[in-house]
Length: 125
Length: 372
Figure 1: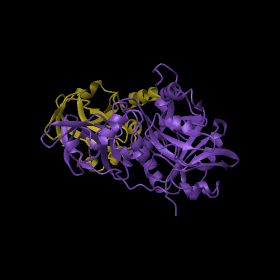
Figure 2: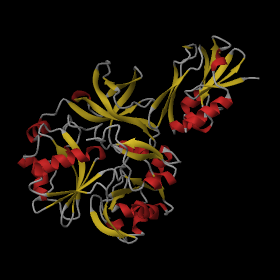
Figure 3: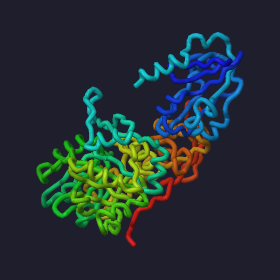
Figure 4: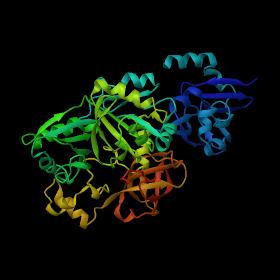
């Protein structure tokens, strides 16, 4: 059973074994508005928890996507680079950003689960 | 002067309507303004290019100049030919400082008994102070900053507005008429900031909601926020004050030489005319150009522009994504020798130089109504 967790920067991470898929939440895509460009790291790059892993640009501005955990990028979603609107349409499915091989398999422990994230978003107003 | 950060944001007469329409409100030039409605910037942009969009631009400053010598007085501050403007005609012009820098860009409309100016929201207090100081003794200066201003823009704007104002579809681009919309007297000009045909409608604040609702009830019309207003004007190659032009840029550097009237060139005598007329003959060191990135990464304001050997040659002043082109676009200033169309340059985005080409503006074809 994969583990789904969320960050205060509105990324989601779904762990399955020693890898995890990362994307941005529905709340994040709504706040950004129309996404027109996505810049993904190269496969093989190391990302570090809390540091920039990707860039997403809306019609208005550029924003960073932070890595929720440290690890090595083992896959990226080239489909969203070609069609960034997929991130708006299906942020937790077809709109995923990257997959990492976890440096620490327990790294998700400190992150919010779905209930805690829903409460966090509700506080954002 | 832009209000300080701790001042409460001002609201336009349409504030409650924006909220009712699901707008996302943001601070802009001291006002709380709709950046987008529910459908989003791209859909709003494309709607304006294909049908008609209604914009609240009541934050802009409306100022009337009255008195026999109003046109002559204004000409001491701008390079446009204002004296030759016939009643019912309008002109885009520039308030200039003594160095030839641009204090603001504005529309000036000659009405029967005054000159009506529309100036930028962030500049209206500064413009008013400048006008009062420089020509206040010669003309009566009447700000109407509480007045509402709506823009109806798009290829179907004329069809829509003519349902309420018969014949308004036949006035040409850059002309004006006083007409009632459902009994509300409005100052209507055929002008805008999108590159499309359309109108700007000035009216008393207490009637703004009813006129806006009347227009929004037409099937072709959707409300459009400031986000799409910016992408529309950028595709149309139009300058945004404080970004593409400011007190340090001259009209020639900015590619706005066309705003300098023929008679004004011959007579000189406008602020900075020595420098500006010299620059017409001996081009300045930098020039505003359009730029199209080769790949899909938008380059935002402040991105460095490099030549093909990666030497810095300028900076982006406006940049983003052009929904009608489905591609990023930018404008900025580059050294004169790199300003020719087709010159390869690079735009630095997140520390990486990305290839681009100096390109013609407007980026999209404009559709102004010049008369049939």
